[in-house]
Length: 375
Image (tube, rainbow, N blue to C red):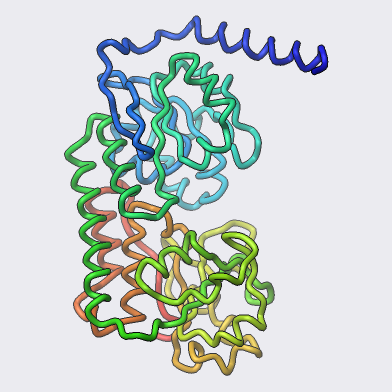
């Protein structure tokens, strides 16, 4: 090992120790122990006053309320302001400190650093599981500085992890009743869908194809297997044609593979991305006619004219930001209702999403989040 490397490592340790020395650490003898999504018992101060949140901002808001943001002193700006700028802009005027919130960096971008967190003197860091895995060295430094880390995991897309993450947030932020209502709402809705489908599902599974509509119909976008839309599809018992066909959890699915599979349903994931003029447009304030106009080029792909989904008008737009969230049950309900309409005649997924906004989010519901190419 080089002397230069050793010197750098020593400097990092000294910096962490120096920063930690300035922090009023939680009184762990009096701390509660909160079970996080990984089943870890995390010692957390009775009322955390300085919290850093790295992801799942809408989930945090639903559980902790706008009042919870008064205690947030840092965030990973990239994954909200960068990935979902139209949604971020709706929360910015409602959260006075959001515009100037210090940035602790992103594990995806390689900008996350323990020093950034420690310098903010938090008494709690809320970290998504995928960042926890990616930042092993940094999290050891953070915990070594006496800062507890609460891990949440909505990306696993299981009822158990959704419920555990929601309860952990509620326990940490002092809103356990609100968290329990949200957790039970999610469990009830997802299990209810599975029960309905089990009663009507036959031996043959409907074949579904999901594609990211970010670059337009002229480009083959990512499909998903075992995660995101692929996970939602298999959760409700559909046959996701991407399973076993991708090198990883996501990637473009060859055009020939889609044609050979001949899916019964096609779902194109859109959003309010910036600088993506060919994208399928969904989200707040998006009129349905604009969404349908942006979706139409997919129906006009020459090779797709013979697909069962296109012939039967089963081409749909869904908001990409709806998967891997505490309200992804609404998108799941939309998919389930298209696949098994007889089992969900009384269900209204758009109304369910609007109700979730009205009860748990501070921004009003509007726009187009899921709809068929032809009404």
